[in-house]
Image (cartoon, rainbow, N blue to C red; front, top):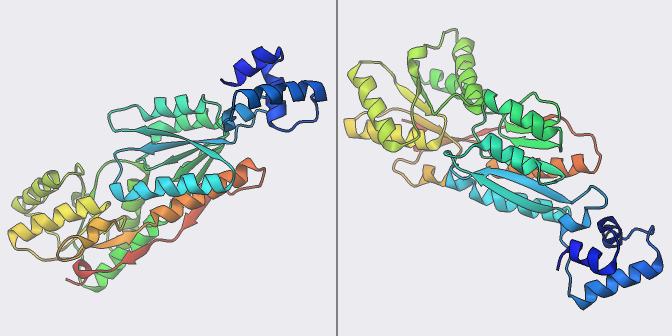
Length: 325
């Protein structure tokens, strides 16, 4: 039995049933008693979506998650759900793979009548802004890991741009001036990292060369091929930064095969970084903290509090063996 069945059996509107579910005093006692009796008779347990039909407030948050994201982000989904539940909110999870249309998925999620939307784990691009704008016209949207200037969209991001700039400066102090930067596409997050890389060079009085900023598919074999080609083409580099740990690990394995040793640093500080020898240094973007913060801020926004459209969390370098080479 659902809310529609109850309304039909009691010969009242759906809105009247919803008012009873929400404890409204705008229902006559006799009608309220009749509705409650039918619910009890049928062991009806109302969902958060049903409770909100009459008020327009469902206490449901839609979460759009990239199912292809690194596996170490998976615990963050549980933390998002837990944080929302502590605030009395339910979660409607929608996962999207690389082969699916995330813009379409976002639109469909917004049409589910959720109070707010949290987007996490995605490599968002400029092309996604229109879909985010449309979704934000229906409900507040909280984006994790990107800075997007769209009305109604709030962003929580780790300051990886500054972290990369600081990393370049540290490598310069170690006399490493030909730094290779590997990234996996023109996403907003990668764009920030590339800008940090350029800023690090500029702060040292140099100009970053485009020939050392390389896009490569996030697969170990693709990175291995990329490094081999660069060495064959005699592109000189004495350190490697990967915008993900997977890219950095691919570079490290490729270098090991050729007998070369140099600093290699990744991003995300995933468990993979400590499952290799030597252990991989990595910029920690505090994924779990980002997701919990985003969920908390979205709840505050839904409660009518004023929330900054842009929240930044500092990044840290988890320094391990590959930074000291």
